[in-house]
Length: 84
Image (cartoon, rainbow, N blue to C red; front, side, top):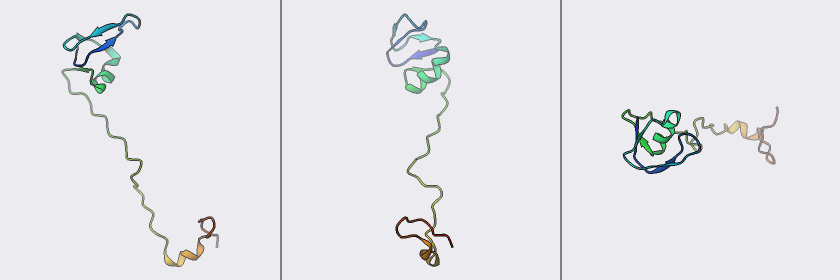
């Protein structure tokens, strides 16, 4: 059983809306995890923490700058390495 902490409309049968208010207790079945995550309901159990998504701006494999002797291998127009 879970307890409502924020009011929201809920249709247990998929058709009939019921306006739930804080303090109401229901079994939300498969919807429980999502409703807990969104903060609409609370269960007596601590809800699992969703790991943070990796920062897309963070670089994990920073490329080292090219060595001085490799500068002549770069094509100035395309920025690509030339073949030897």
